[in-house]
Length: 560
Image 1 (cartoon, rainbow, N blue to C red):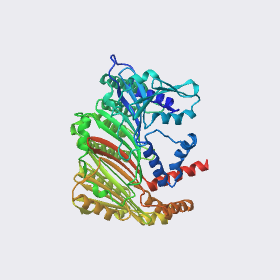
Image 2: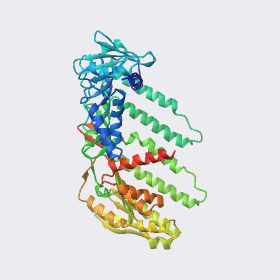
Image 3: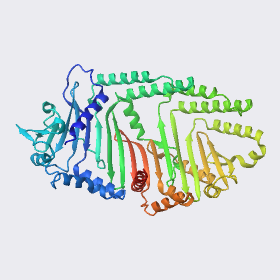
Image 4: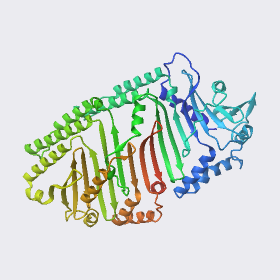
C-alpha cells in the first residue's frame, strides 16, 4: 500500500488520456471505466512459482514471499483474503475521476497491524476511518466496506463516491489462466465524450502530417492517406466497443505463459457482425499448414465486396508510384518497359482480388538438418492471369538466355487437382559460401515451383518442393478447413537442430546444450480468434521458448 499513491496518480492520468477530461455538462452516477485486477494473492504466488519452474529459475517463486516475510517480521500479509481478487478501480461521474483500491480482507485490523511498522507514523483511527501517513507528508485513507472488503483512497472525501458494495464489473472475474487483468469499460464512457476524443484524434493526426526531409511527393501522399485512414478507423471503433480486456497469466495445463486481449463489441454494431462472421472462418489452403512445420502462418479475411472503394485511392496511388519509378542506370529502355508492364499487371490482379471481398493465404516452412522446404498458397481472383504473366516472364527471359531457360524451366510440368505446376530448378553455385550445408538443406538444384489454379496461386521452394506442394494441393482438394481468422506458430526445436548441425562452433555448442533440455513444448503461438461474441488476440509461449528467452536475457545482461 505505500506505493498506492503513485499507482493512483498514474491511473488517474491514464483515465484522463483515455477519456479526454472535460466536455460533460451534467454529473452522472459513478461508473468504473478502468479496472486493474490481480486474480488473488495465492494465484499470483502459485503462478510465479510455476513460471520459475518453467524457466528453470525456481527462486522466482519464493523471492516475493521471502521479501514480504522479511519486511513484516515473519507475519506475511495476515488479514488479507488470499483467495479473492485485488482490484484498482478508476470510476467517473462524467466530470471527475476517482481511483480506489479494493482489498479483500478477512480481518482489516490484522492487515493494518502488519502494515503499521512499515510506516513513518502510527495509523490514526477515527470513526471507522484509518489514516496512514506516508513519506513526504502524503496520506492514504482506508475504510471497511462490509466484512469482506476494504477500500483505500488518496483523499478522505473520495470515500463518499465509493459504493457500499464493490460493483461486479469492478471485481472482474478473470479467466482461469489469467493472473493479472486490465479492463477498459468503454460502455461507461459518455457518447458525447467519445465523439470529442475521436475528433481530437483526427485533429492531432492532421497537425502531425507534414512532409519529412527527403520524402518524395508520392511517398508523402501514400503515408498521409494511410495515417488518416487509420485515424478514422480507430475513431469509428470508439462507438462500437463495449469492453477491452488485457490479461497475463500461466496456463499450467500447456505449461505456457499466456498474453491475451479480448474485445467485446457493442451489440448490433458492424464490428459485432464482423466478429460473429469471424467465428465461422474456413481456409482453402489448410494443406499448406503442415503440422510438423517449424514456422507456419495463415490469414483469412472476408468483407463486403463493395467496401473496396474505401481503399481504392491507396491502390491507385501505389500503382502510379510504381509506374513512375525511374529506370535503374543498368536497365535498357526495353527492360524498363517490361518492368512497367509487369507492375501494371500485378496491380490489376491485386485490385481484382481486393474487389472480391476475400483475402486469404497461408505458408509454412519445413525444416530439418537435411531439409528446407517453403510452402505457400493464396487466393487470387484471376488465376489464369497469373499463368499468363508467368508465361510472359519466361518468354522475355528466353530472349536473353534461351539455353538456361530451356534447361532449368518447365512450364506446366504437372497438373494436380486442376492446378498447373511450373518448375524452375536453381543450381547452387560452386563458389557460394557454406555450399555443403546449403546443398544438404535444399539439394544441389533447389526446386522453385509455382502453382496456378482458377482462383489460387501456390509457391514452393527447396528440397522436394514439387512433391510437397503436390501433397498440399491434394489435401486442399478435400475441402476447406476450420481455422482462426489469423494464426502463426514457431517451433524452436527444428531451428536449434539446424543450428546444431550447420551453425558456427559457438552456435553448435549452445544449440546442443539447449536441445538436451528440450521437453517437447517448444512452440510460440499467435492467434486471433472469435468466440462467444468476442474477438480474442492470444500469444502462447511454451516452456522451452521461455527457457531460451530467459537464458538469452541473462547471457546478454552478464556480457554488459
